[in-house]
Image 1 (cartoon, one colour):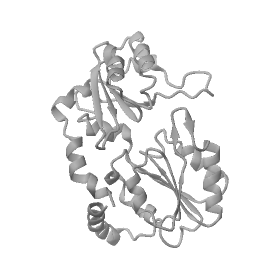
Image 2 (spheres, rainbow, N blue to C red):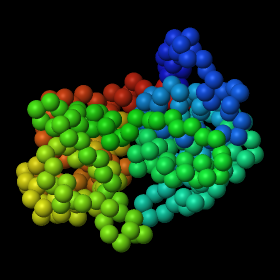
Image 3 (cartoon, rainbow, N blue to C red):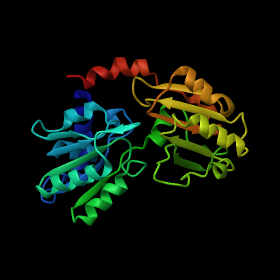
Image 4 (spheres, rainbow, N blue to C red):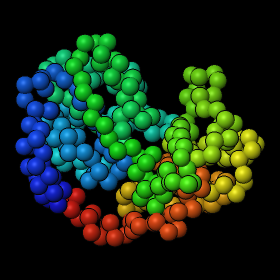
Length: 289
């Protein structure tokens, strides 16, 4: 990642003067876990602090949605452990991941738990932090750029806009079977006049659409579904709420994808700026060995 290196060296030099690099490096890092947000997909969207933690890691426990280019920043001798979950299956259960983080920290290692987006936005980072706290393991949260905001931005959609949307609601479209009652009140959300962002909702989009329509949300309400946002594979499908599920099925969009519902979606026609083909031609080579 030479271009990323050069840019971060320049930024890092300025930051070093104001903020000495004692995070993820030095006196307080033995036997500690860093819950790091990797950002929404584009590896250049990780924070400087998150990158610094990766470069100091002895163990990296990472998810499916983490861009592989970020693993190139990890020291060669560091252990890399994949614990990614996919719809319907997972490599390790959450309890096992918690136990793994505790075990590695108790061995006196610098552990980076690398998660797509932000650890505390439907990333189960809170559960992992609680497990670490209960086990007496030192930890630190390194926030990341959430896909709920960044992915719409890459599709030219501001999630808030003066005069159009002063309310932003982010929900999950994935209901867990252990909850008898629904976690999301779709009927209440249909009555909000603002922007609704749904994560992990592609598989349930037909059901979500029907519930919102039944609750009174206008059939013509603009909707965008953005697959693989912020990277070369990004695809966007837009349409009215009454038709969006069918359009997504025809286009074959799959997870990971972000759903945006509200008037701000109409701004995409004017503000769309990201050209995946140009990204691929101009940047993809940067992240290859």
